[in-house]
Length: 275
Ligand code: SF4
Ligand code: SF4
Image (cartoon, rainbow, N blue to C red; front, side, top):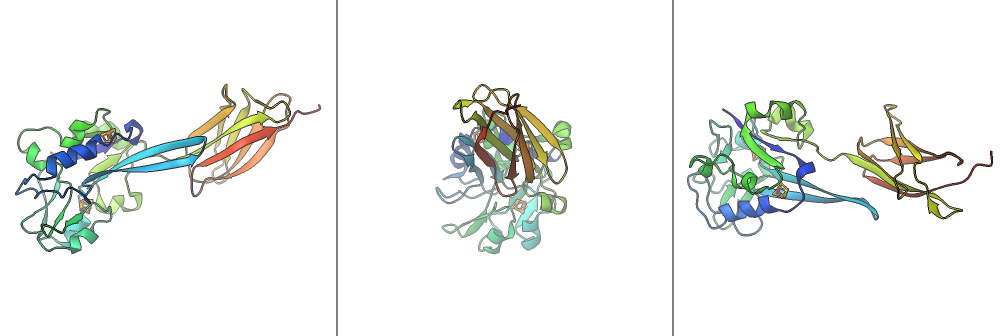
């Protein structure tokens, strides 16, 4: 039965336990014929991509765990079929005995998952801790180390629900490569801000904030909270009109461009209507 990983960034708090567990398992340990020792530095067979989003005070940090995607149609295997093989459980392994000197492998992975070990003169990457699975473990060390279930590993049949809503690290490549690592809740964009009555110098609680996607026409609505704040989360990277409406105030319209990054629109001042 083919194994797969399911990674949920919304569950990840950036503790890096998975990365540390990988180091603990592989640095200074020779798991031949699956893997030679990982160097102490420079290799991230599993890594956590940390990204600060938005701007103060509307800031979020997202953490995306990255590792070999154990592709069914693995580009690395195409480049160097003599040194890369797929096990019956679907894990893609670089054979350490056959990968000596194959520097081209480090450039072959579109996901940046292969590293070159200069000391041992060999290409290396995540093995899914195949040596442990063969020894009776049910999951790799990174999965075992994650207290938040942000990384799960198991038979494909266990993950039917997750697969139905899964996304991929590189969506444009997914159909071709068929990765065995799928993602839930990958961060999209957010729009956040605060509504203030400038003259009263007070936040406006309960204002209706509407976000209109100019490409699709989709409308999303929020109410400002007790701090006058609003957050639209997991929205598309697109251009929007944002409308602020509150009883007794003139409606305010702001253009928001989310194409490149998350947007903190800052403080939106509204003014009392004389009607
Ligand atoms: S161990 Fe889990 S929560 Fe911690 S960084 Fe890794 S995936 Fe995220
Ligand atoms: S993610 Fe990279 S190293 Fe892993 S199987 Fe796919 S191409 Fe090979």
